[in-house]
Length: 170
Image (cartoon, rainbow, N blue to C red; front, side, top):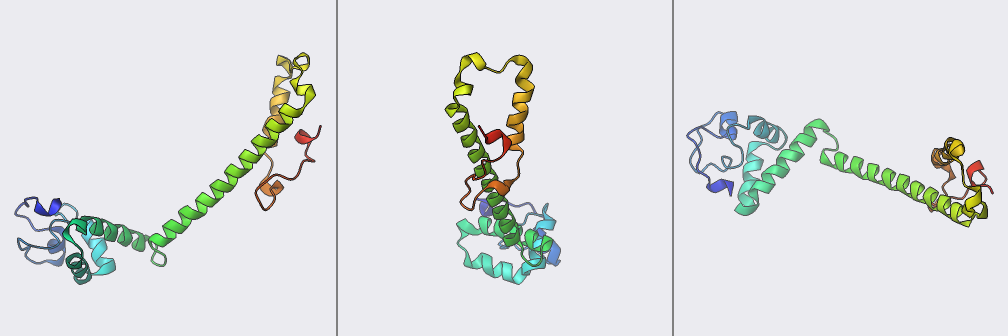
């Protein structure tokens, strides 16, 4: 654990920032090293040294490093986005996850529709009518066009429901 590591004779970042003498049992010293002055400056700007000191004394010693890392992350997020802080970053990631899940459901539905149409079509299963090499770019173009359609063809439950498009009519 960092709190039991021997310290050099220099003051910790907190005491340097606060312009005070760093005592041997300084509560900030194990968590705000002298080579990380910006870390404490950000935490101090958002939470204040007194509040950070109170938080660290109330937290069990084995959880203090995680607490300081959380405070530093929250301070950084709060300085970037004063209104929402880290909640704004979490909301942004959740919104992105929902969009990606929606895109994945579109891709899965199109893949299922393509494989269902391919396997159920007697013309496509007949080896005598296989696409020749000269027709290959045209056949690929149809497949690529089917993946390029917009997401308006999804119903509310995420399933495809518009089979009137060209690649899907047989």
